[in-house]
Amino acid sequence: MKYVDWLKEKGLEYRDGVLHFADMNTIEIAEKFGTPIYIISEEMIRSQYKKLKRILDSEYKNNSIHYAMKANSNLSILKILDSEGACFDCTSTGEIHTCLKAGISPSKIIYTGNMFTNDDFKFAVKNDILVNLDSISQLKRLVKIYDDLGKEKEIVSFRINPEFGAGHHSHTITAGKTIKFGILDDQVIEAYSKAKEFGFKKFGTHIHIGSGIINAYDFEKAIDKYLTIIMKLADTLDITFEFLDFGGGLGIPYRPEEDPLDLELYKTIALKKFKELVEKGNFGEPEFIIEPGRYLSAEACIILTQINTIKDNGFKMFAGTNTGFNTLLRPAMYGSYHHIITCNKKNKEKILTYDIVGPICESGDIIGKERKLPKLEEGDYLAILDTGAYGFAMSSSYNSRPRPAEILIDKGQVFKIREAETFEDLIRNQDIPEHLK
Ligand SMILES: Cc1ncc(COP(=O)(O)O)c(C=O)c1O
Image 1 (cartoon, rainbow, N blue to C red):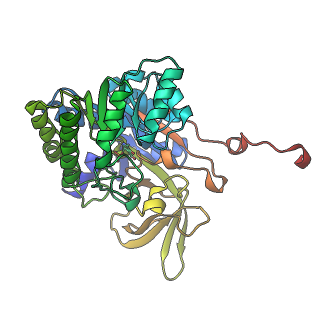
Image 2: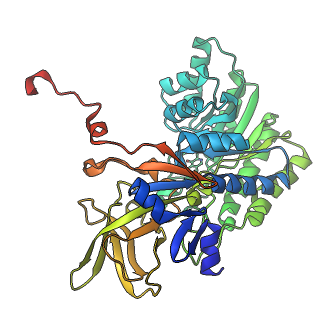
Image 3: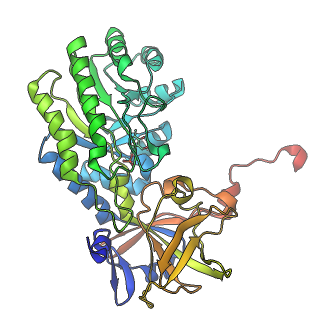
């Protein structure tokens, strides 16, 4: 793909030398709202959801996309996806609370936590949220909560670990025998037969093998194994399934030389095989579920940042910005690549090599290593791409730097959807004991 087309796919283009994102002039936004700032395009979230939904609908109508809101839990993003018809995957009671605050129906939420406490279960059961268990030991505790609350045990699901994982970094591979998530093949019969004995009437299953998978073939072994396990379960226990959840993990092209995930191939590997088995008819007519986070929100957001210091130490050039790993953790946490471009292309030639760094007092505070860019000057603005997933969500106020604002742009309009934190926010929940006052 040509570089300009790669940028265009992400809503980015230069007009008269100025970077525009979703038709908005980035320099005007930076000057009006200050930096750093997360800018989110409503249209791009909608179109990414629609693209994925269209692919699933073309093969099997009984499907749903559960947005993994850990990627970006801003209320406005939840509202946008809810209005498109999305469902939601939550990993904590805090996320469930946020969904409910956004007006999302409990029936659209699956709670895929891990290492659940009894309080987690109580919260879920009280709010009629379907729980996706992560260990056989949790079943008994969940049942007790249902009984204590006098609620009918309706449906339960287990996260199955299909032992083949994939992901952009070892920390984001979530399947395999040494990985903490889910139950292994040997345990599934025991898990579902116990669930049956405890009186659950309906069943679902789930896998999630990792995050940031850009090659669709990386899903194949895990999905084949998952489907084999499902057939074994259905045959052995004579049960059918309300849904099979294939998890998230759908990657996006962070680097200009990367092609987008081949959705048609993903469909062949996951949905077509699933459909063939459904047609053979031994495990009911379950809903096909996926739960992408990154795929829906990552490309819809850029961070605008300003260069405050250009330092040439005689060995290396540093472009110091006001965005550090407090604002975007992925490069420091995973060594992840985020493409960085200038907002004003007054010098077009990429002639110099810079480390783009932040203001955090750690030498690992590097947002982009050895980037070839036009000659940069103090005061210039840069755009850091693909920051809508695990961007704000993983941000912190480390070094006592308040988190930045988030704005939503749509059809030429700008909406502030999160105020920047203040210095007062940094100390808000602290108490000083009497003897220190
Ligand atoms: C259970 C589960 N589902 C879905 C996701 C979303 O992953 P991604 O953003 O890569 O699609 C995650 C991410 O950690 C997860 O743990």
